[in-house]
Length: 316
Ligand SMILES: [Ca+2]
Image (tube, rainbow, N blue to C red; front, side, top):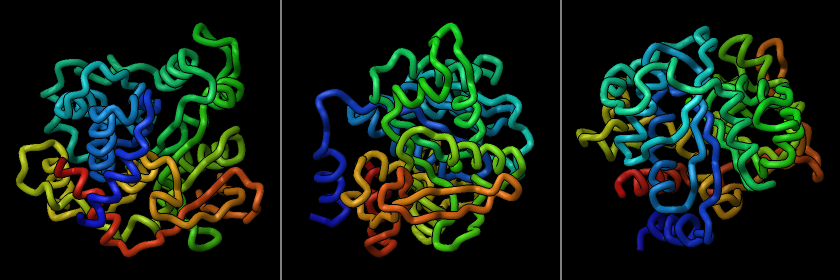
């Protein structure tokens, strides 16, 4: 059996629990198509019964954001998944190119105005979940999660955002940072002041374990070209981005890592300690500490292994 096939059988499908693990996903769903590849993988896992996607929060906003995400999820067979959007987040740099083609196909959400306010959505979904049962995936900017931590009691819970996250969340899996140097700079932390200020808060305040997958991990792992010319929104998004032959795999690698639920089993060494981000410029720093609650991952294998796992899932 091919190595990636065996990996998926043993490390992803093989650890299937009785009840699917619960996830809330944050995505910028913005200029880069790797979010779409990640959502392809996560929607596959949802359909396989490995995970239950409780909701998706979009943290960068353009005209077609919520409708295009709704259309995408529907194209993958997922209907009625709650979608939130930060409607103020129109100031990130970059041009969103793939959303306009998808948006008209949505049978649910037709415009951003029909999506939920994202902090309310996270609070609503967390409040109705069992203690310690929710895992959060973030493949975009940090301001919604930072605002969640700073939120107060509301109609969904008497707990503060910090208390609610501490009670309900097991772990945050996040694609962000550049960890092979002190002072590393990466898009999700340093796109603009909104991103940097939020990233500093998230790293300082988040009350649960965090695993980071950094820029240096995904840049050289090229995936998604296997879908070229297929009649899928994933392939069309990659084409619109100019990456029909494949794209760096930051977000899909984070998705596969989260699905495995175990860094070592997913093919990574880990460095444990405490991550910090400068609110001024989004540069990131790491203090190693055996008792730290933050991890960043380093690849154990060649790039081809990770790309073949992603492509293998995309072709299922
Ligand atoms: Ca992203």
